Length: 68
Image 1 (cartoon, helix red, strand yellow):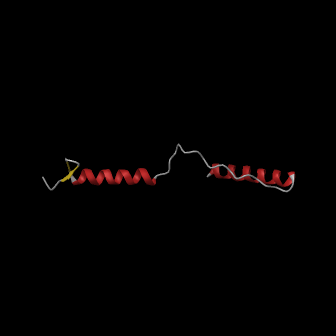
Image 2 (tube, rainbow, N blue to C red):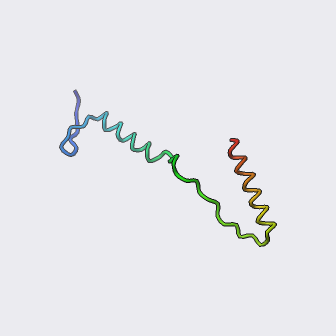
Image 3 (cartoon, helix red, strand yellow):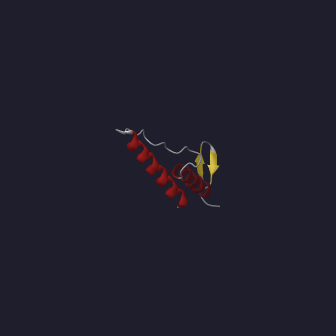
Protein backbone atom coordinates (compact mmCIF):
# COMPACT_ATOMS: atom_id res chain seq x y z
CA UNK A 1 0.00 0.00 0.00
CA UNK A 2 1.30 3.43 -0.93
CA UNK A 3 1.10 6.79 0.68
CA UNK A 4 -2.19 8.18 1.90
CA UNK A 5 -3.42 11.63 2.80
CA UNK A 6 -5.11 12.55 6.06
CA UNK A 7 -7.99 14.93 5.35
CA UNK A 8 -10.30 15.98 8.18
CA UNK A 9 -9.07 13.09 10.29
CA UNK A 10 -9.78 10.45 7.64
CA UNK A 11 -7.34 8.49 5.50
CA UNK A 12 -7.83 9.15 1.78
CA UNK A 13 -6.05 7.21 -0.93
CA UNK A 14 -4.55 9.19 -3.84
CA UNK A 15 -6.72 7.47 -6.46
CA UNK A 16 -9.87 8.36 -4.50
CA UNK A 17 -8.75 11.99 -4.35
CA UNK A 18 -8.05 12.00 -8.10
CA UNK A 19 -11.47 10.53 -8.93
CA UNK A 20 -13.23 13.03 -6.67
CA UNK A 21 -11.35 15.90 -8.32
CA UNK A 22 -12.19 14.71 -11.83
CA UNK A 23 -15.84 14.22 -10.87
CA UNK A 24 -16.05 17.73 -9.42
CA UNK A 25 -14.54 19.29 -12.53
CA UNK A 26 -16.92 17.40 -14.83
CA UNK A 27 -19.95 18.51 -12.82
CA UNK A 28 -18.83 22.15 -13.00
CA UNK A 29 -17.97 22.13 -16.72
CA UNK A 30 -20.91 20.24 -18.23
CA UNK A 31 -23.96 22.30 -19.18
CA UNK A 32 -27.05 21.77 -17.09
CA UNK A 33 -29.72 19.96 -19.14
CA UNK A 34 -32.49 21.03 -16.78
CA UNK A 35 -31.69 24.75 -17.12
CA UNK A 36 -34.21 26.89 -18.95
CA UNK A 37 -33.37 28.19 -22.39
CA UNK A 38 -32.73 31.92 -22.62
CA UNK A 39 -35.62 33.98 -23.91
CA UNK A 40 -35.31 36.37 -26.81
CA UNK A 41 -34.97 40.05 -26.01
CA UNK A 42 -37.97 42.27 -26.66
CA UNK A 43 -38.46 43.43 -30.23
CA UNK A 44 -38.54 47.22 -30.47
CA UNK A 45 -39.89 47.52 -34.00
CA UNK A 46 -40.92 50.81 -35.53
CA UNK A 47 -43.89 49.24 -37.33
CA UNK A 48 -46.10 46.15 -37.00
CA UNK A 49 -44.78 44.82 -40.32
CA UNK A 50 -41.22 44.97 -39.08
CA UNK A 51 -42.17 43.15 -35.87
CA UNK A 52 -43.96 40.45 -37.89
CA UNK A 53 -40.90 40.03 -40.14
CA UNK A 54 -38.55 39.66 -37.17
CA UNK A 55 -40.82 37.11 -35.44
CA UNK A 56 -41.10 35.04 -38.62
CA UNK A 57 -37.33 35.14 -39.12
CA UNK A 58 -36.71 34.01 -35.52
CA UNK A 59 -39.19 31.14 -35.90
CA UNK A 60 -37.47 30.08 -39.13
CA UNK A 61 -34.05 30.10 -37.43
CA UNK A 62 -35.33 28.05 -34.48
CA UNK A 63 -36.68 25.40 -36.87
CA UNK A 64 -33.33 25.34 -38.62
CA UNK A 65 -31.54 24.78 -35.29
CA UNK A 66 -33.85 21.87 -34.38
CA UNK A 67 -32.90 20.05 -37.60
CA UNK A 68 -29.23 20.05 -36.67
